[in-house]
Length: 121
Length: 212
Image (cartoon, rainbow over all chains, first blue to last red; front, side, top):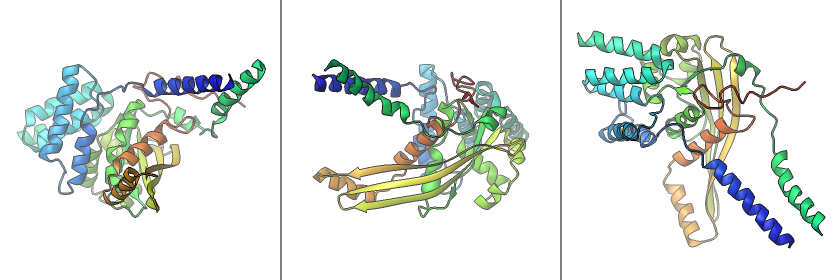
């Protein structure tokens, strides 16, 4: 009788703690962390490799497709990489998306956008 | 007989309530509650050379999920290099106001990895990481939050699989799982972690009530 009660209580506690842990994330992270890890392994230069860029881009594509929230810094990262690859128009577009989603990034995004535009002319 | 069951039941639940560590004093934090956090490249006081850079790749997620705007870590590193802040010494001696000026960041997070060690105990291995975090307000330079935390990951055990795992763990070093564990635990710890940020549903709702 006691054992049954204890077992039931234990199960209940375990179940409750599991449901507490199963909270969904606010943002869609996708392959972002993997793309950062790829870059960390590449010690030369800025670190972005073809593979890490693919992981970054696919994260954004999936988030947009699912209409999920792109995490802070992801569009900014993407924009910066596009700029380094010479894709300036797309770069500015991505940086603007970051600025729109996260007003906290405004100062940095504005200075990056104006630097890119100045270089382009 | 029934009373004993109830007592036992309650006694089982009590320890869960009692496990409340001494809480951090969040007064300064609340006074300058930041919206954005700039994570600086971690300083390394451990012997694991590659640990900091990998550590840095797992810190954004817990901070963002806690509701803060986090500047992208690699872009941050590049800008710091552009500013001539090429090493940890230069970074830590820079006035936090500079980071407000360049990035527009409300707060800066200084991380020091104190220890990253693997220990082998015959049939299992465990990796321990100890780090300290310090969140500083960029406008006033005051410390908003600081915490030292230790996280452990164990592999192995009493089985062939366990022995193989222990051996593999020793040879192939993937710092990520432990780094993730560390960053999640330090940010989310009840009473000691960060308060909810502006993008979190609990923003300003989890302010501790200071009892006199």
